[in-house]
Picture (cartoon, rainbow, N blue to C red):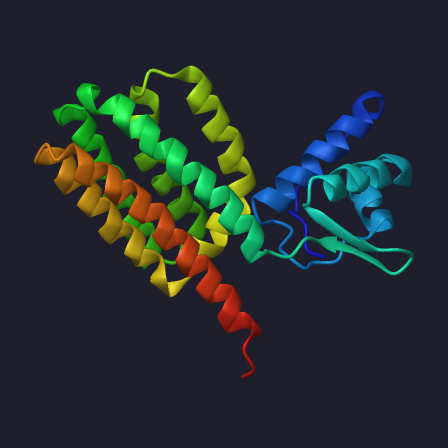
Length: 226
């Protein structure tokens, strides 16, 4: 179970919450990959705590669907599932379209420039096979109209959902078909530049629908016999 070379040790009085947060971060950002075994003793030694806060953290993560266990057999990072992708992508798709609907009157040349710059960064990150950088660029792209929506509650809900979506998105941007996102983003930009509001909204929904379809396709290919 590879861990970062430098691991920040945990203050004992805050052990429960810090261990939970550290394990959650490692799972979400891909340090601990789907299906990877988690051994409570090894994790406790790495974080310099007893096994108790590690076990408590793993129970919380299991409740959140990030960890899977078989009683007295194994504990592992939860596998990526098509059903979870359908649920999360579908919600984000509709909320982002709503955010863009609110934001469109506030999107000028400066914002369009931000979208183009983020999409160029996304293209470059995909070309060098840097999934994390690609995901960050993709988030910057979408965040342009989320911030301009003027709805802080909506922005907060989307931020929470995208935290859960991060594992799935890292898998997306680590694949050959990630470049389809760049093309879909370009359509969004063209639609906004030409003032085609409805087309822009459809393009945003299409971007998320495409991401869902590509994710399901990768899972299907993994399950297919060699």
